[in-house]
Length: 76
Image (cartoon, rainbow, N blue to C red; front, top):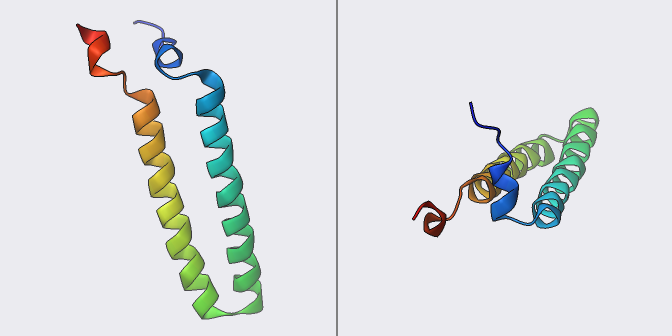
């Protein structure tokens, strides 16, 4: 099995780390807001935040997929 170190060659490590850190931070804030709304019993805020968290998760998966995927030129 080949080591998975190739990923870092395609995207500067600090860029990838910055994107992931930003996403994690945003999701942390959304999760806090969701937990707060859930404790307060505000169902509209809860459903809104669930939607935002799902969108955030989808976006982070998308960014991860882009950063993990090697560019097509590298295969030539």
